[in-house]
Amino acid sequence: MRSPAEERWIRRLRDDGGCGTKLVCFPHAGGWASAYGGWPPRLPLGTGVLAVRYPGREDRLSDPFPSGLDALAEDIAEALQGLTGHRLVLFGHSMGASVAHEVALRLQKRGRPPAALCVSGRRPPHMLDGQRRLLGSDEEVIAGIVRLDESRAAVFAEPELRELLLPAICADYRLVDGYAGGHRPPLDCPVYAYAGQDDPEVAPEQMRGWADMTNAAFRLLVLPGGHFYLRAEESTLLADVTEVLRHVEDRMDEHS
Image (cartoon, rainbow, N blue to C red; front, top):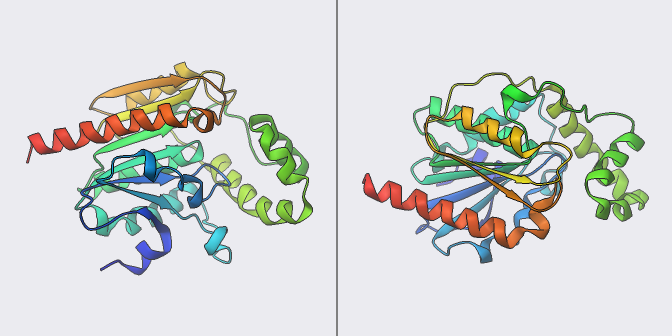
């Protein structure tokens, strides 16, 4: 039976009782769970595909924003407790990578670490010094978003959409700007990193710093594109995530 916290925080994009492995997807700042809605058909049928529902957007529009990124991670880790009997693979892009990592640390501290962590387009916590501050005036926030994703310009040209989207984006930017990072205990699960070759927010070499976050295997895949490379390169990205999922299942089967 699903807990109220799980119902509130987790959206099942595809899942049933037979899915022993579950991919849990963490959106970027200002993002939403439905952004991962196109992933299930491109991933193995036996894998559950879940997405985290951040408050203050979509069907949680009236829920209060979290006080900090650590508080957000704590709430999500609690919501995932009922799923830790399965093989959990966490995938996070941009802010979602930091949240997924903090959730992974909390699950490990509780004795139920994830099977793997996948991080995309975000510096590791001990390399955040000098990271660009995201929050500013509404105009500055919008200009920063459009710089990373020109397709969003048309969205923010619509006053009603701008009014709907900006509160969640600014709330998430406060979380990112307020997250100090620093050194963290190493994970016992493998970490897989993904980067856009021309991402102005994080260079591939900075993504290699995630290797310091695990005692297990590490691998970096660099793909063409900028910060939102994962849209144009979705097929290649999900083919690699599929290999991660298969490797996780093979490894777990060896130890069962």
